Image (cartoon, rainbow, N blue to C red; front, side, top):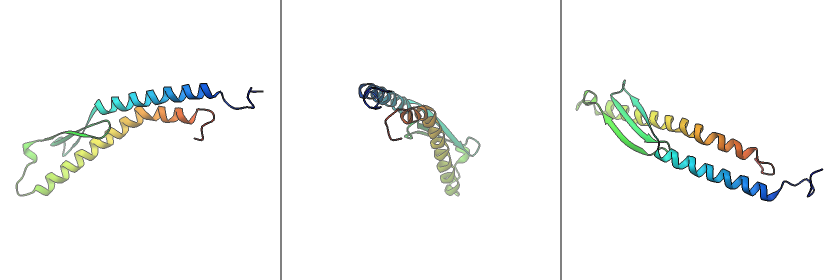
Length: 111
């Protein structure tokens, strides 16, 4: 029988929660500094975002610039930024996914 009527040790739960909070903050800080890239048009347009999704750089190859067709260039830019954001989301899952799963494994929490 568990002492305390089957309730988990609150001090232990608080320590686990505190450590997870610290781990989460560290992972978020790392994501904010990590850059990932997405590209479109076979590399004619490249977008760089942080792991938290902040656009940091946009590179456009001169071959992609046609003054008569700015719509295609705009589409390539949007596609490159979307690809970079998808890569950032994958990075977030890699870094934050295990932490979120750890929250669910803490006894006494409603996850």
